Image (cartoon, rainbow, N blue to C red; front, side, top):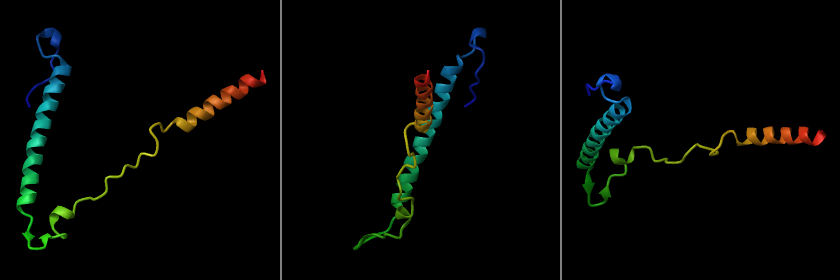
Length: 93
């Protein structure tokens, strides 16, 4: 990459733009490697009269795509208790 986040005040690049350039380079490299890996995987799969072997490397990858996120707001219950306690205190006055 070779780009450093030198001070943009002294003629260097603005750190945000340096970050974006580096992120784009890394993403493009990742995409190139991913495409090559997918092509390699499919080129090595054996297909016979029965189709693709279910025990091939193609099917040994993780099959689960479920998410373990239980709630969008993990503090929701805490927020409700906090608001309820304030409401209770206001009612006592």
